[in-house]
Image (tube, rainbow over all chains, first blue to last red):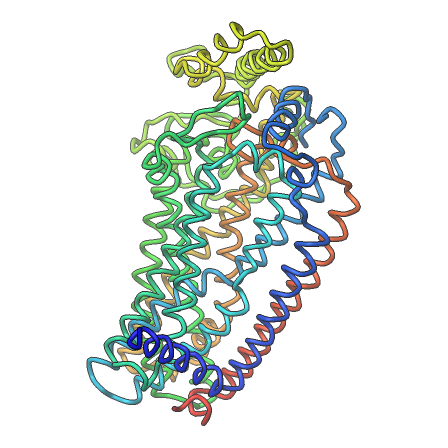
Length: 79
Length: 524
């Protein structure tokens, strides 16, 4: 147990030291990553990109039926 | 129903996906290639123990890190778009797309959270050999990660290894190895990663040349040019070789796309390869679509036949042959015949739907067995997508875009062979510094490498049109029934977000390049 704890601690310290001693470009890039991930997951995914089939249908059976309807009752115009 | 599909919705959804994919691809190829260049440099450092090589490695690793960090997760947006904008497609492809992407996600997660951390945080904390191993694993892992995306894309170009389940309206993987070793996947993977190696090599050559022109970092620049020049030369030859192999495969599995590359309308024996050409609309038509003629062209006789058939006298079908078909020994099915077969498959699927509705169990079982019949799958259902077409000429992709992107990519590919070869030659001869014009050429080659790389993807995706899955599903049947307005809003959001990311990448990189390898923060 103590061995596992020590290993965990050394891994934690490795990342902790790494982030603490990060260079200027590293800090900038991490700020960009954090902002980007927030925009992607907290804004875009939630407000703009719901899963269409999950949102509109409750079960896979309904989703299958909907898609089957879509691909069998179509005369699609291609440009 | 799709009968009411709004074409502006389809066009905006396509535009949005294209925008996202093009921006995403700005970041990826440099990661693929620069990771290996860094690994080569660190290997020399570990072998020689020379601290200058360590500094050199860390400098390029910094640029790799900036590119990697800013590009990371941009691909996730493409996956969001599948679920929101392309729900019919996402459902229809089933686990065939999901499985490779899941493997890619797991690979990327472990790669990014462990070995990248060792690469950047591990200097002087882990042994030299462990650090070097991590650097190599990042390079191999990044490229393997790309493999799974490319396997998924290759399936869209040449759907194999699956069966269609009418009950779930999904394709189900029945042969993982057929999907993985799809000839298109093998060619695409090799061509894509080698082009990434080449782009990264040109990137290193360009920046190193800038240092030489500025009279700075001569030791770093010359060693970088040596490594990138050799790596780039090998990669550029590999790109040409894999591109040739790719074209042969396409001639078999996507013949219309192949003919569109060359704007070849009339099939012929001893077909020539167009080395250069300018197209214009002619009065001739296939259905309602105008045929393009050449205003000017330089043609290499017989080469297209050799490239596609391995025989100078081999017949290469043109777009008109592939649309109209031929009943002679060439046995080319016309698009009209494929439309008939596709409609027959759709009628069967409609019958299945009706049988389910009235719960006719006997009919349900009968039709399920039809979908297990190889003859039906290979001769009818494989043309299912044609049932959506109204006219045969709709099966023709945009010839001008296909032709110009292909020729731009190929011309630049050959140009980069020269750039890499001359770089190494002048460096070894000791006259690189005297040839300032060539240093400028390598600097301007950097944006050209990106243009070539993006052209390759535009060609791949536009050449496949009108299909999202070759012959099985057209783009217009894949789109979700959402409002075009919401797609326009997200298109604008993406344009702003990605432009900001690209601007951030370029500005941080330029600053880091101007700072150079001797900045105190970078020397640990």
